Length: 373
Image 1 (cartoon, helix red, strand yellow):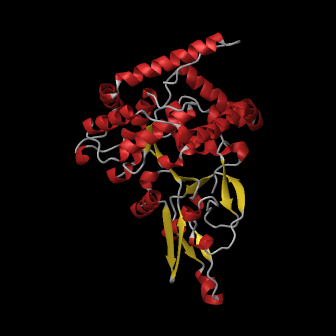
Image 2 (cartoon, rainbow, N blue to C red):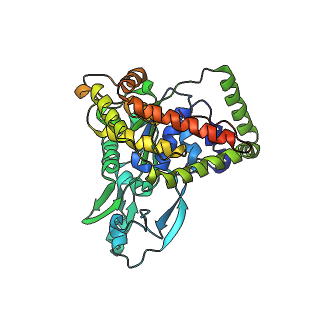
Image 3 (cartoon, rainbow, N blue to C red):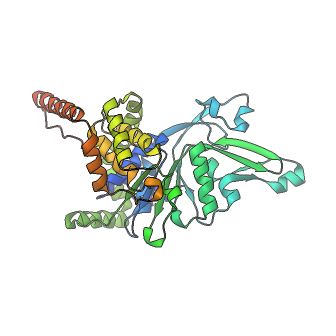
């Protein structure tokens, strides 16, 4: 259920040429409340490789020891039915993980069931947790989501929206949290997703084949080393992998204190309205994502660069004008936000960056501070 063995898993920091995808993925890991990511692209672009590459850098989480559904001991209001009946809830620490959904999955396997044989033979009520229960607090990965049967997609999206799932079989009912990061991959050449499903993925990245010759050569070198000597490959990227892991931990600590200028919120709302984006969910996702991107970059205030990247990730797959218009292009999104983003906020950000550069240059051993666009 958790992907590849450690020595056969490509590393996140070794992936080149997919910076936008990596930012979107890290944002969801830092802030699971964003809700998920759809990765769309032709075959051979490494979609599945990227998804599984994060397993070694995922953060730790606390669970109720012995709980079938990974309940968080710090959130008693979100306990499953079984944990509510328990008198004690000892905590253990495990790493967040990836739970894979196979295309051959049945509805019972997805939602959960009971052991009918034991119920009829011994009268025992043995709950069999489904994939939605195993995914609670983790990443639920659906490869080729566009080929998944509609009824399973609907079940997943319902759980993703409500953050709960209920197992009802033979007069037995058990409810449990189903709070996961939904990651789907698809090749658009093999079929499209219904617009209603597309809209339920908070973020989307449409990746393309890397065309830069130098970068392609580096990708080849990394893959050859990975195949020839996995240990040497891991040694080469060990420090950078630990750096990414620490960035995730730091960003999670910083995120609650990240603020957004009200003028930026107004600009997001105005831009989405001008683009005729359906519903208010995209506006909310943009702000959530922008705050998370700021935290990933070690800042406690959202800047226009965070808003622009978050808006592209949020809007490139969204229906518009009641489904009459195609999703906006990155150019349309950028032009709309350029018109509505307040110049005062942009000037404030330039001043802050200039001050950081001056302070760093004045310090012993100071070096240039690169602006995060």
